[in-house]
Every structure is written in C-alpha cells, then in structure tokens.
Length: 304
Image (cartoon, rainbow, N blue to C red):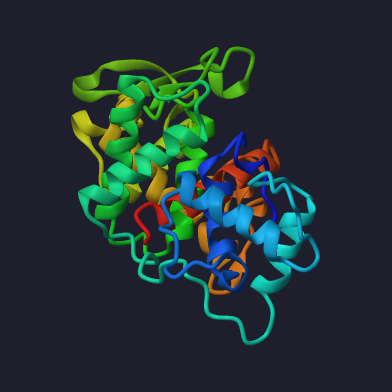
C-alpha cells in the first residue's frame, strides 16, 4: 500500500517524496488519466499533474467526480483507487527510473537532489554553509568505492542530518560531554615527552566519543602524528576525516558492534533497526523516516 505523509496536487502541501509517489501511481493509471506519455519524475507539481489527477477522479468508476479537486490526500479515496490499480496483475511496470541503484551520477543529478532536499525539508532549511556541506558529503559518498548500496548512502545521510543538527558539517557535541564519563579530561602521552590534556566528547559526523574509539579510528584509518585523532581529537572535525570515520565505522561496526550490512543487505531493509549502529534506539523512527525520504530523492532526483 502506497502511503503519503501529506497532500499532493492542487493546494496540497506537495512534499517532493509524496509527489514522486503520486506521479508514479498516476503514470500507472493511464487508462483513467488519458496520458499519452508518462509524467516526469521531477518531484514538482504542475498543471499536467493536477490535470491528470482530475482526469483520474472524473473517470475512475469508484469516484466519478463531477467536480474533481485535483488533490490526493493521505488515506483518501483517490489514493486508495490509484494504489488499487498500481499493484493489479498485468499492469505495466513502474515508470520509476531503473538506473539509480548505482551511486555514480552527474553534477546535474546532484543539483537536482539538493533542490529536492531543500523543498522536502524547508525548515530550518539549508543555509549557505549547510548547502555546501551537503554537496561535499554527497560528493564523498559518490567517490566512496566501499559504499555500493544507495540505501547505505541514504542512511548515512540521514544519520548526519540528525547527529549534526541539520548543519551538514562535522560538529562538536552540544555541552561537550559535560556530566558524562567520556567528558572527563584524559592525560595522554604526546610527542617529545609532552603530556596532552584531552577530552573525548562527541565530534564529527557521527559524534565519535570515548578515548578508546578515537584510538581505534587511528588504527583503522592509519592516522598518526599530527593527523592522529587520539592525540588531537579536534581532527575529528575535519570534513575528510569525519567522513572517513563515519564510512569505516558504520560499515565495520566500529561504534557498537553493529554495521550497515546487519540491517541493509539484499532484500533486507531495516532503517529503524540500523540506529543500533550509532546509538541504540535513540530517535530511531525519526532517522528511519529521513533515510526513506532521502532514498527516494536520491533515486529519482532526475528521473523522467
């Protein structure tokens, strides 16, 4: 059953993920819409989509509206009728583009994704620095040969969205670990017989905590000297380092013993359970919803 969060069409809320779902259903109900060509999977509402919704509402035998409103509401009759025929045996294959499982796509598609994201999450919205940060992390995901599943990428982005409070930049934990065991100062042997007074509170894209985890990431990523996280924990705020920590740690289970492939592999998709990779059940449903929406936007940002 197709579900939408908010209304789509004339005077609708028109969030891009919901719009994409409705366009897909409309394209698969051309016998009631009269469409000769499928509507583009743009995530945008225009006169063509509204006209197709009205035609469906006029022509479908279970609706037969003399005054179609051109809007599809969550849980409404129009959505139920659209979805009924979407899954009917013998209907055409979905028009949703099939070439987007690979993470590699061009700059146009990245621009389209950023635009769709901005409209999906308008509040607090993307400031200039946050937009640059989102571009940067998407570029890093595309270049990461170890991230081969678009659903992994979606969950990683959803994690950053939450952990970094929509800034899309590596940040320090609010409060800097005050009142927590990992917020205590630790004396560390530094170079040239020096003593460093470090605090290993959360930093980066996934809020790396505890001295043992900083040291573990040094070993995993081959960091030493001035680049060491254990010696210089502020290095976790460098975007390249923060991304490397997130990618390695989420793929290998470095933070909690749970890894991406435990929840997202083949036919298995458990965005909610994947929260255990970072932080138990904390805000698991919220981050799962982010991941599902981001996956839609990533897959279909330049579909046609």
